[in-house]
Image (tube, rainbow, N blue to C red; front, side):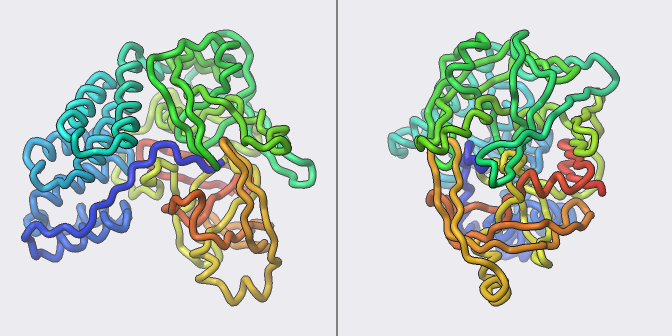
Length: 441
């Protein structure tokens, strides 16, 4: 399921700070292209005395935020605001504050996140439009609400956590669509049917089920984007039990789960409760075993090593991984909430236009998600060669979309890799510490 939940566009523009060093130009280019792997590599290999103070500090900010290294980004953001604020325009000041707050929240310091972001908003409020102010205030309210709790405290019953799951059919039978539903799952002691969706940036629950499971409403609102937009509330589940693990103070976005389409709404119940990448970050290291239908999590997280990452966050906080499709290198959104094999965007079509138009069938697909239904023209391409996590295999089918964007928002990835493709691997490991995805045959 594609969800743009936390959209932080990093529009760095063209920096002109009076520096002419080639290292600065390379770093600025990597930032402007949102190429966090290149930025990480440049920061490690370029001579330190060839990088200006601003780019040296801002590199650490972005590397830490996009590659999940809050221990790197938090001190860097502090240094940025203390020493380089005059080099930040309004847009970069706000975006940097949003990322700083996000990283503080990731380590559980929601009080500091709310205080810092509120201070920034107060200082620039007169320069912002009302829509932006409301959006930023929503995050401040969420951080303030979470500061009264201790989110994501995890208790293991054994040396490693095990979460059994089922692959369940969803949607019209002709589509053969499937999702992951977690077994042995309970919210506040009551059994729950939970979908595991790596494409979801936050946990989601329907309004009726939030009442059923006695979630605690918080003084904060929420906005969730899928095909459309849904506004709702913010709430806490005091206890989430999944498999043999217990997680306390788990935040959920409480929204009306609907596509606003009568036919599509017949099948939307499978997304009534969703957990995804926010929970994955807290679990630190998890392996999805598609052979034995279980997710395993070691009780002791790995320490960060010097291995190069192959995962990153997009500007909209999608969990992306490097991959190759038919020889085309690209970033992929790893999305177990996409019940199909997945899709490729128009950039792939343009790069392979002659082959696709002569060998593939033109068709239309209807994508349904939270907030709406979207009909897209596409080609269906058969037997696609996929490389992910250093393993290769053939995917029976994907769709190639002919639109440049969806809902007016340009994605930073070329492939949305669905569950049916991921299931072709025996196991997939997400090391959220090193930000490395590994596949197993």
